[in-house]
Amino acid sequence: MAVPVSSFAPRTRSRFGVHLQRITSSNFLHYQPAAELWKDLIDLATFRPQPTASGHRPEEDEEEEIVIGWQEKLFSQFEVDLYQNEAACQSPLDYQYRQEILKLENSGGKKNRRIFTYTDSDRYTNLEEHCQRMTTAASEVPSFLVERMANVRRRRQDRRGMEGGILKSRLVTWEPSEEFVRNNHVINTPLQTMHIMADLGPYKKLGYKKYEHVLCTLKVDSNGVITVKPDFTGLKGPYRIEMEGEKQELWKYTIDNVSPLAQPEEEERERRVFKDLYGRHKEYLSSLVGTDFEMTVPGALRLFVNGEVVSAQGYEYDNLYVHFFVELPTTHWSSPAFQQLSGVTQTCTTKSLGVDKVAHFSYPFTFEAFFLHEDESSDALPEWPVLYCEVLSLDFWQRYRVEGYGAVVLPATPGSHTLTVSTWRPVELGMVAELRRFFIGGSLELEDLSYVRIPGSFKGERLSRFGLRTETTGTVTFRLHCLQQSRAFMESSSLRKRMRSVLDRLEGFSQQSSIHNVLEAFRRARRRMQEARESLPQDLVSPSGTLVS
Image (tube, rainbow, N blue to C red; front, side, top):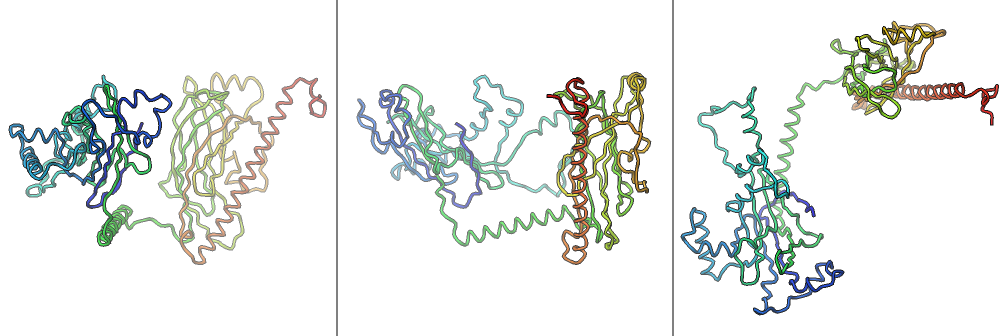
């Protein structure tokens, strides 16, 4: 079962309470019916083991509870037996442990029996870091990174200044070799580790390595964050350890955070530290932004669009690409001189998706524009930029064909928008035009792409498209992320009220555009119904165009 990992900011004098208890003996487990084996541990704890041939197990051997501090050393029976022999001591730490054990023996013995600890300086910690496994498979072969990480001593390191302030190595390696990358692709975060262990050996047979089990592992990184694995018990119930072998004894244990509450002066000092930390972080963010944050002129609205040509589907031929551009209204709108308002996607082959063939472009683009409404007394509805697109296809000889034209008004509200643009293309009557389009490429094209909608240069009252034969083709999907910036969003003067009136008109313009889209969809639906009627046999359709029952 996966055990959660808890991370929390450590306070001073961190202390952990560990409670270890033996639940049942092998006789109870072997002769208990299968339906009762999985009862709650509290019910099993009410049973006590029967006396064995060697006598009764004492109560203190069945249960132990102890409070342990951070990096507090509690010796195991194995270490007590080992360090009492001076010949087994090899390092200064071994001799230090020997002196402490002799003092404990003179003062009445150690206070712990089964529960003990391995601190950051013990050999067990080093061995545990070296023998880490990524999986539970017995045939696991360690990778290069695992082998390198096993040789890294993840400890707190002293930061010593370099002599004379001279850099000993280059900070940036512009052309790293493969060997350099392999040698430096290792995470070395300073870390302190502590293990809370238990000796679960039989009665009067403590001190054997094979009976040692890890109850909890605690780690502290350089940021002062403690990681506890497994998590504190809390209300989740105790953890269980089932011993292997003939007896198969069952143990349960709990781990709790029993650190004393901080004193008022400590809490005040901690608040000051956090306040200073947040203040420094705020200054750091301000330094990243700088003082040159660009603001719009009063009364202006800045439109910034991050867009993407997502896909195109429903077209006749393969190898599609999209040519698109943004047309700004001639009045009140402008863009920077360096701004590019057009683009061409890469050529993309199509993939079958249901009944349609889809070309996935994922082509990003970006642009910005400015709206400046100088005459506030005018009640004319402000115009909004329009996105035009032209879909083309390439044949084997790199000759292109027009697959469709489309246009859509950019959203007047900020946020993320996904727009689907329906396209059409002009057609000629007769088979010759289609044969020419298939074999030698080329077809009717629009000289002015803005003719897809109402051209910006049109000054008349009515625009007639009478006699223009068209054919509905596929659709193009755009994803737009629109941002708007204006002083009116933060000012409370009359200028803000005037700007609100402009935005209200733009919102009405957006509603009109939505109504236009609905009407266009209704017209397309009627056109499809008409085509469906024409494809039916004549004996099923009445002269009025309705179906005959």
